[in-house]
Image (tube, rainbow, N blue to C red):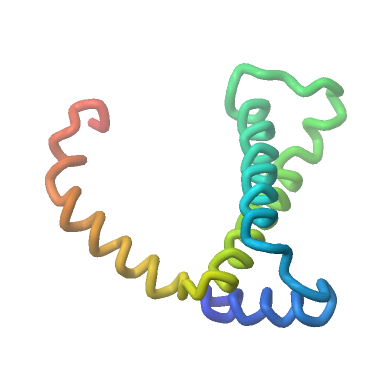
Length: 112
């Protein structure tokens, strides 16, 4: 699925099954909540925190994928609501980063 297809699919889902978009501020709060859920799993999978119940570790990678998809879904909702074409935005972002960071990362001793 391309980003453009994802934006169309989310819009179709929202307008059929979801009834309507939540307002932009509500979706921003939901996005922050979903990012927090990704952070919680990352802290347990790759950081020093442990799972409260050992059996939660068994499904953690699947849960991480699901939470990342939740983040992407809500981000796409916000893009649709605000008229942002994420494909174009990402392409422009790559150009910006390429120009800005052309030598920066190569010269960063921490990365070598």
